[in-house]
Image 1 (cartoon, one colour):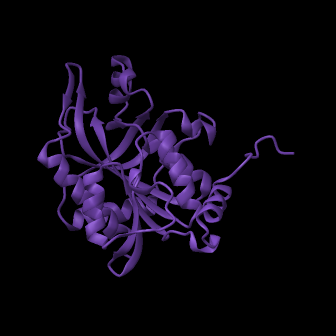
Image 2 (image 1 turned 90 degrees about the horizontal axis):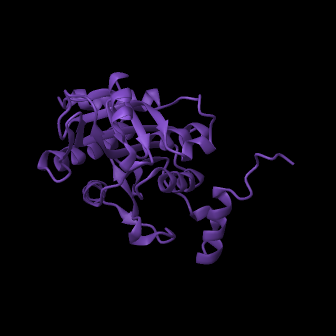
Length: 255
């Protein structure tokens, strides 16, 4: 027996949901195109854009809401997933098992570079794996990156709307309160743009499952030699999260 074979799979969980909810398993599916965020306000904005309707079988309910609607006459799913690499990887595995194939994450990150300011938009090219979840998918020396095709579609939409943005790497970590000065300097000096908790795990799951994933991040706080600037509630952050989720929808439904 293959020692690396999982004892149970995401598909096993989907079959369990079907059985306990008394649904035919073939009806438990999501659209191929999926956007997810971690911010309830951003989710509600996106839900209105797609005319989203909750699905009956979704096991997490309003604790982790999910809906299906249309944008540009194309079916699309939208979720508000839990924060952190382990949680998002678990849910991502499940929606991939239900049919998601083109996925865009919309989140917030802390800026590492001095030229970044609250509200700036980053299109993520690749992610530094400093969280634990991705290491259950690939050895430490394996890089994870966004889908080049989705990334180009997102950049194209931002350019079309005249929206300023940056393209580059993020650092993902589980240790929110262990973002040490040494690590900050290391990743800043390497040109990494920002830090968050999830993107490297998202890219790892997508790579392992052979689906496309991309990420749009909005700068919500700033790290520097002097300390930490919090800007989570600033209007520019909220507005650019709305712009990011609309950009994601446009990129996914372009063709």
